[in-house]
Length: 100
Image 1 (cartoon, rainbow, N blue to C red):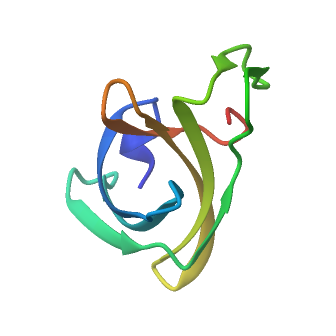
Image 2: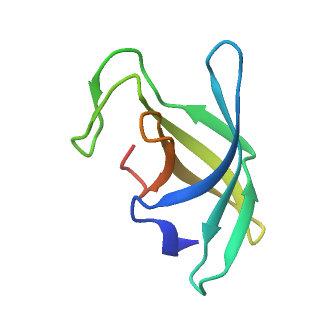
């Protein structure tokens, strides 16, 4: 799974609810061997805030940047990954741990 952890765009299936909330459902990542793996999001925490705020990595987030902390199962172990949706670009990216 580590091959995608460089703020790279990833494939994502998500639900956009009528109240404007986003629910991540599945993510497709490239593993160390270059194989594409699909992971179901077991649980998530929406880390977005209203208005502008500064993330720990120094990036200023606005209402168009939606960071999520997601739990997936990889080889039988539950792991946390950080995914960020950039609304203006319509792109999901995976962020290294501690970057969202």
